[in-house]
Every structure is written in structure tokens, then in C-alpha cells.
Length: 170
Image (cartoon, rainbow, N blue to C red; front, side):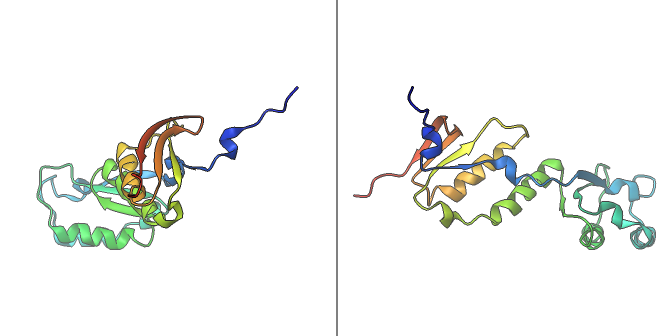
């Protein structure tokens, strides 16, 4: 009997699993409508008192999406003030919904990737995982890799869909 050889393991393919970039911290929403008087206006003194007295450590390690679900105009400085209290505790915070938060978390993760590490590499972007990866992340990884990779595929190393192949130099 001949020995089985794993040709995928021996190949020069570099696999990137975008699931590995998902921050494990809990995602929460902070709705500033809870700070509005009668759901309509933000009273500066009341808000500043709340900001001072609230236990912000409850947001330790969490990822916070700051929203305003009320039909009320909230001054920009209020969100800025909120940010000053979240910064020492939260992992990440954004003004926007959970999708905006997820996008910011991926942006942070992509900022840590050195595209030069993939110079002339044959890259497989892993698909079909256990965690939901937003389409945004797949498009953004292409933005990072297109200038450097020799080829980019999607799927699993044993079964890929070709996405890009660098043109041969003339």
C-alpha cells in the first residue's frame, strides 16, 4: 500500500480565516434616548450628573454601539462626553448600530495586518465557518491583498473558487 500524501498541506497556499479577526468581546447598544427628558430633550445638567455618577465599569471589555432611537436632536457634545467615560472601560465604541460597530472592529483588526507578509503569496480566504463574517470584511481583505498577492481564492484549500490572479509582467 502506498502512503497517503496531503498535497494541500504541502502546497504554498496561505489561508486567512476572517473568523480569527472577530473580536470576542460582547456587543452592546447604548441608547442615549434613556437620558432624554420625556424622551424629547437632553437636559445638560441632568446628563452631566448622570455621566459623573454612572458606573461605567459595567462596559469593561465590551464593544459599544451608541445610538439615538428617539426622534430627538441630541447635541454632538453629548456623544463626545459619553465617549470620555466609555474609553477607559470599553474595548471599542462607535456612534452607529451594531453593523457599524462590527465594521469598526474589523477595521481595527485589518489595521494590524501587514500586507507585505502576503507579497506574491497564493492566498485562500476561508469561507463557510462557524461564525458570521460580514460581506464587508471579505471586500476589505481584497483591498489589502490585491496590491501584493499573486493569487486570491475563496473557500477551503481543497476546494477553492478563483477570485484573482496577478497579471504576468510584460
